[in-house]
Image 1 (tube, rainbow over the protein chains, first blue to last red):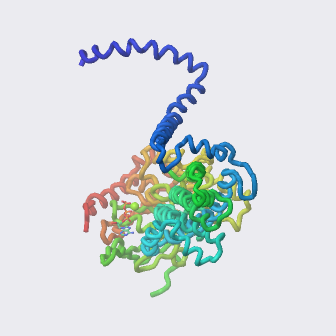
Image 2: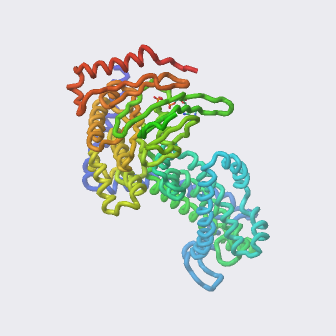
Length: 294
Length: 269
Ligand SMILES: Nc1ncnc2c1ncn2[C@@H]1O[C@H](COP(=O)(O)OP(=O)(O)OP(=O)(O)O)[C@@H](O)[C@H]1O
Ligand SMILES: [Mg+2]
C-alpha cells in the first residue's frame, strides 16, 4: 500500500504547480469566459469534428469521374446561393429555402395542431377505460407504422382536393403516438389524484384540465414530440400532392429536373428544421411538466 | 321494528367483498357503528384488516356490498366534499402550490356562496389553522413530509366537511412531528367541533385523540371487535395524561385487544 503510494506520489506533485497556480487568477478575471470556452470544447467541438470528418470522407468517396453523387465542394459551387441567402424572392415560384420552410411549417402547423388536439382528446377518452384501451391499442399500434406515402392515395380519394389531403396526411401520420402516449399517461394517473378529484366532485371538464393534463403532461409531451417529428417527416409526401412552394415540393421538383445539389441543400434545411421543432416541443414539455415529476 | 332516533353517521350491517375474477374476498363483515355529531372516533386494527376499506366506504370512494351507510339519514353512495379525506400519503397535487392545492378545493365547494375575496381569506384562514401560510407559494415537493400532511389537513378542512376522515395521516412521520400534528388536530377539533374519524395503528395516538376507539378484528371478514369509551375529559395534555389512571387503563385495554385476543396473524387466507 505505502509502496504504491510512494511510487505514484511524485508525478502529481510535479504537475501540480503548473495546474493549480493559473486557476485562481483565471477564476477571478474570467470565470464566465472560462465556462463558455469549456462549453464550446465539450459540446460544439465534437459534432463539428465529426461533421468535418464525414464531409472529408464524402468528398474523397465521390471524387471519381464516375461517381453518382455530387461532392460537398460541388454542392457548394452549384447551390451556395441557396445556403447563403435563405430569403431571396426572384419570382412567385423562385424563392429562398427559408421561405419554403416557412410555407411548409404552416402546413405542418395545421396538420400537427389538429393531430395534437384530436390525439390528446382521444387519448384522454381511451385512457380512461381499460376496456377501450384493450380494444383500441393494438389497432393504433398497427396504424402508427403506416408510412406517410401510403396515406396519400387514401387521403386523396377521401378529400378529392389536394390541400386538405396534404394536411390530412400530416395529421394521420402524427396522431398515433399522441393518442397512444396520452392514453398511457391517463392510465398512469395515480389513484390518489383520482380520489382527490372524486371527493371534490370535479366534473369531466375540470378533471381533464386540473388533473389529467398536468398529471399526464410528461407522457403527452413525449407523444407530441414524436408526433411533431413524424409530421415533419410527412411534409415531402404531403407536398408531392399540393405542389407550390414548400420545401417538400422543392425536393420533388428538384428530383424531377435532376438538381441533385439543390436536394442536398434542401435536406440540410429539413434536417435542421426538424431538429429545432423537436427541441422546441421537448423544451415546452419540460417547462410545462416541471411540477409533475415529484 | 320501530324508527330509531335520527343518528348522525350510521353504519348498518355493512359488508364489503372484493371480486377478482371468480375469486370473492370478504374483507369487512357486518360492521355496525353509530357516530354522533362532533365525536372523535379512532379506528385501530392490525395491518390489512380493512381499516382503509371502511374509511373508503364512509368516504363513498368504494361501494358497500350489502348493508347501509347513512349520514344524517341520507344514503352515502358517492364521494363528496362533506366527507373530506386526509389521505395516508397526503395526495397533494405536485404541480400546484400549497395555496393552489387548497384553492382547488375551496373554489369547487364555495364557488357559488363566497366571493373571490372571501375565498382567498378562507384559504388563508385554513392554511393559518395548520400554520402553513408561510409556505403558501411553495410546491409540495419543496416542503417537508409533516408540512405536506398539514396542507392535506388544511385542504380537507377548507371544504367545511360534516365528517373529516383521516387515514393514518401521521403514519409516515417522525415522533416529534407526529406529536405536534396530533396537538394541531386536537386543537382544530376543539375549535371547530367537527366529527372526525381517524385510522391509526398507534395506541397512544388513539387514546390521546379519541372519544371512542373502534377496535377491529383481523381479516379476512374483519368486523368491529370492541368499542372503547375513552372518557378522558378535554382538553387533554399529553404529558399530564401519561400518568393518569384513565389513560393507562384505556391504553391497556387497547393493547390487550390487539396483542392478546387478536394477535396479528401473518397471511391469514
Ligand atoms: N380494491 C381491492 N381489491 C381487492 N382487494 C382489496 C382491495 N382493496 C383492499 N383489498 C384487500 O382488503 C384488505 C384490507 O385492505 P385495507 O387497505 O383496507 O387494510 P388496512 O387495514 O387499511 O391496512 P393498513 O393498515 O396496512 O393500511 C386487504 O387484504 C387488501 O388486500
Ligand atoms: Mg390502510
